[in-house]
Length: 299
Image (tube, rainbow, N blue to C red; front, side):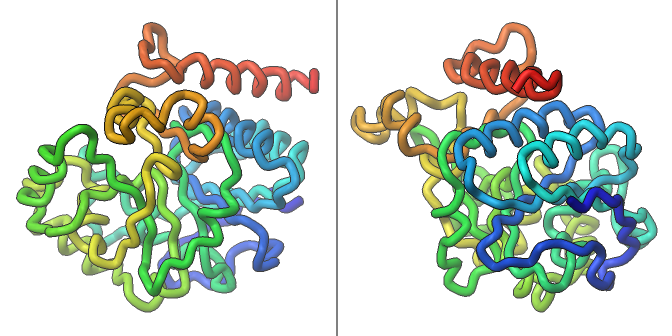
């Protein structure tokens, strides 16, 4: 398995890591800092348990996580039969970008991923680390993107109020997409995404950007994004009752466990924190417990 950490210094980078480029092999992308590595391990456990026969490559774009901190993830991937590809991003690639505490350079990583990943990768699935995968990802991976740059889900809840506010704020007329799950056409991205345009937009619209990377996705590429079903591919774990009402009772707990593939723990409250009140917290604790067993070599 490839565990070499590669330094990618510019959007014009060549193929940066040898990998298995079999077309059917699912490619997963994450971006995070060192503090979220335990969350990545729980996510990986959930992925493996719920599609044990899938071969995958796991890509991690980061700003400087030490190799020793990445070792537990590498061991876990080796145990699961996944190839692990840490990609260290050189800050010089963002010399012209607006960067601050509010706008860290990491916020650009997922949108500019086509330029930091190998040129023979044509598609990748980005996942936030605060996610559980509880059913197979294969149907999403094989989605016909119909010539779009991205496929993503919108979280609209009981009403369209939040969606309408975001449309007015950003001057858009499409649903407000959540950037925590993104199926990305990397080949098209290399043709259509221009880093300087993203940097210019961020600079010019700084006052309107509340969730900077997500806002940029919606404002600049919302019309190039295919909408997918959030109840299947980006289920907001806070909103069980909303989904139940919206579906006239169909999307009950049994339905979720049988049909939902991606359970997303959106918001500030997280299931690994004390006092988490939402109903899927116990499911997260289950996968966290299994991850601990794997790390200790019990299974």
